[in-house]
Length: 418
Image 1 (tube, helix red, strand yellow):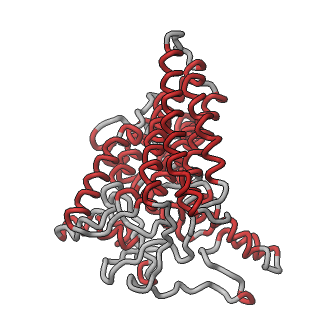
Image 2 (spheres, helix red, strand yellow):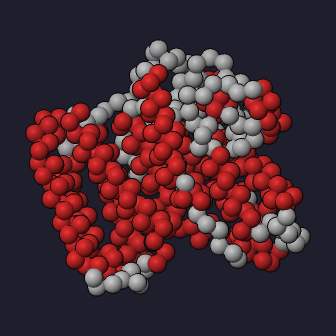
Image 3 (cartoon, one colour):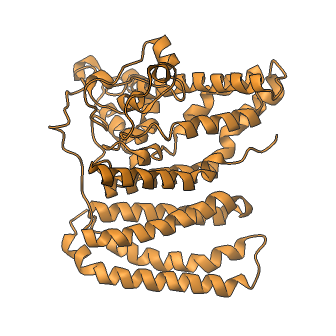
């Protein structure tokens, strides 16, 4: 199989450029589209998803490849019409995957990560689940049976995902009616992210909105959207964001008397309970004026330090995504662990966790030591790299520790038990 480039990883600089443009638009319009803590957490979830996905990506394609090689019905050439049909097929099966991700509790537990933000801006597009691909990959298997090559599927699937980045914005209003009729737009997708009762489980389309219109899940944007989930996450921990719903679900199941109810709770709509426990939970009415967003944040003087550390994490993540395949399993796991540790720590600083400071003091030397050590495990390692990488690691450690000591009083004054 021809290997498709990772277009999503290649688009990361463009994502950040457009986020910067949206932040500038926010300032010029004097609107409130971003909160620093929320945006960092959104991107942290995206980092977690991309890193975890890079570790297990082979699992997602192996089933598709096996069906295509052994059971495909047609030999579909890579012509313009085949690419068009593949696009429609990907969008069609995405609709059903996305719809069931809202209608089955077991799938909602993964997809919920994308909906946890109480803001709506381009950074929310990067907020993705680590576990969602385990479910989504199953829905695309019919395309392998039809005869669309793995290369075609992977390329189209990536561009279908890339399309959805720009629709996560409040800076663009409704577009001309013909576009709104056929395509998924910012207006349609704002509805999808709403927790207003009339907006729940609507507008599941990826690139196209026509499947929502065909299958009865379309809802136009009318009243102002309240973003987020009905039971807010109330945490800036991106790893916990991937598990919290399953903890809630298991908590509900522990109170169910019948084993059959505990089993089917996984496959009922989110919020389902047996009749004796009250039945399906109702979605509460909300308004923008009455909702109170989770907004724990670090002292203002700490934010530049967090931003600096985040730039380093993005750098390590970029190296992991583009160079990771050249490393063995253990170096890749070590890099992933460093990345996860970093995003968890920065979230803990926002959350004012009492352990965050101690963890950060330990993390910085480990990160600095990894700068010269990890390159030594690369197959193309050159000895002359050692001095340069050691100096870079030492410099980063000196700057980071000096900066951390300077803001230490502010951190300690704001700490709470966690």
